[in-house]
Image (cartoon, rainbow, N blue to C red; front, side, top):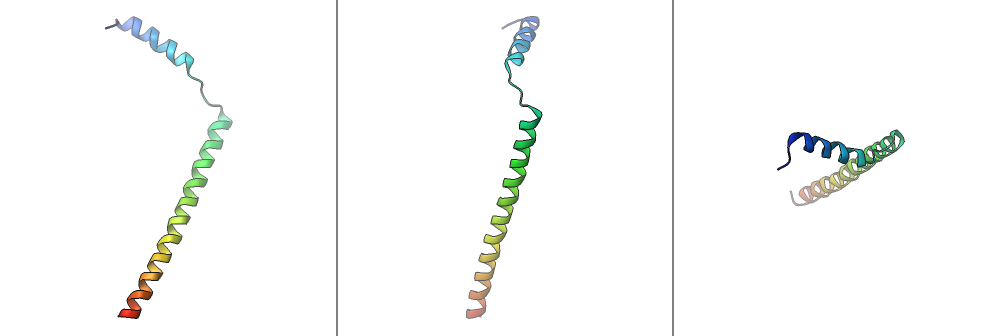
Amino acid sequence: MANPLQFMQQVRTEVGKVVWPTRREVLLTTMMVFALATLTAIFFFVVDLLIRTGLTQVLRFFG
């Protein structure tokens, strides 16, 4: 087990190796996440609407 000073030096070294994203990259990926989440929500809304309509028609036919 390393002593705390040695551990902190290793942590600083490893953090220095990290490639941080630019502001533009962060904004683009954030916008992509929101766009895909919106598309997914619309898709599931349409699927739910179709299933609900189909079930309503079936229940009306037999009911």
